[in-house]
Image (cartoon, rainbow, N blue to C red):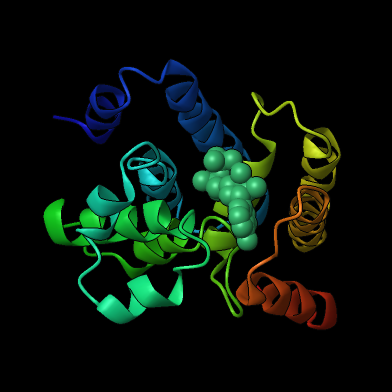
Length: 187
Ligand SMILES: Nc1ncnc2c1ncn2[C@@H]1O[C@H](COP(=O)(O)OP(=O)(O)O)[C@@H](O)[C@H]1O
């Protein structure tokens, strides 16, 4: 079974999520054409990044072998679907590629010192064509000119959204934002 068929089957009751995944793939490959990076790894990460989006926390965390990782993200369980998909790709689908692993694992808010492919997935996730929320179009336009600034802006929009909803940004998100605001891109 192809990866895309696997994801389509898994998300058969969530067609909008499947369309989002196709949108991320399209947008990420568009950005790859501008900035480079490993196109095959980007495509694989885009297809798999939300595989476990609708699984329960118990189902998601079964793929995370290290309890310390589960504990670390206890206050932000939204992170589990990303981490679970990264481990599933590596351990079950035998996709032995650190680029794919990192891009899936960190697709929600990136990481300090992330690979180009990870930043592409983060930005594409925020601004793929089906996104209707505030900022998606602005981030997309900026992403064609300056990927790092588009990433920074996407994180700022997310943090603003969280603050408005009374949610606390996770400390890693703030660290990543600070790092990329202070550190010129070196890809
Ligand atoms: N610190 C946080 N606390 C709670 N929710 C968060 C936090 N950071 C990001 N989010 C939310 O997590 C979701 C990001 O998950 P992701 O899988 O990347 O995107 P989406 O579900 O939008 O495709 C977004 O809805 C975002 O608002």
